[in-house]
Image 1 (cartoon, rainbow, N blue to C red):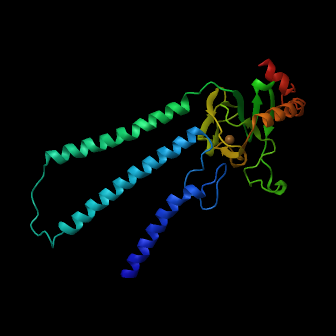
Image 2 (image 1 turned 90 degrees about the horizontal axis):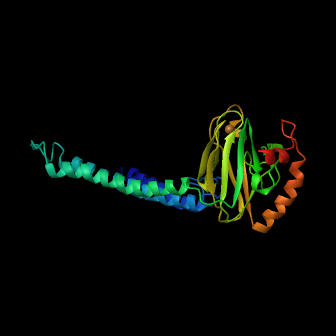
Image 3 (image 1 turned 90 degrees about the vertical axis):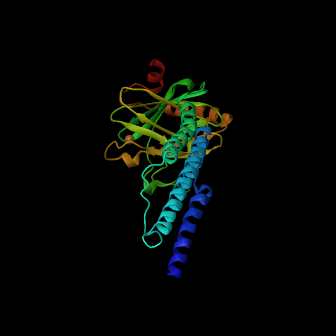
Length: 282
Ligand SMILES: [Cu+2]
């Protein structure tokens, strides 16, 4: 019995340690082995999502412990042996008011930061750059209307073609490149079925619907590559249309744009119209 209890305590302790230490393990930009927590934050929105997550974790832990204590008290003090003559009490106004009002207050406590977070996510600040994102079966394409309207397709790198450091099922041939510390507005749509553009480290997940333009935004605070995946089941290769966003300095971004303009304007899309021309015409 004793060793069983000790094993249980060790298990609970380990689980708690794992949850709280996982913030250190949680990869930024991509998942990491043994990760439990959310991915590390690369934008102010994701930082706020982390804070909200910890608030909820704290509240739910307190509630679970409180209920556990009540159950233990009931089991120990009011079992048949220690309390052979049960009381006939059926009403207690004070307790009934409390168990109505306290949960309401907890919900209000949750609602305030929740609405604040939604407001931050949904109110797009004045963008420094706009990237148009289009979901296809089964790849993403990107256009840069503010930088000459060039555009390109972004396909998964097959496992056999992976270079060193490229994560399996996440690396793509053409990454979306954006400047760091700038407000990037994304306009998301689809050319066929519903997809969803999601990058966990940005706190962004927005549906790509055919015939509709959805907007979101992010401001990446650290240079690096951040990976995401299509998050709306969209067909056979749903799992094979990753998203890779590379955040670089402003100077590197300008250099990339100059090079990308000449590289991608020569590529025709299915319509036969040069992508750069098509972007300008729209
Ligand atoms: Cu998809």
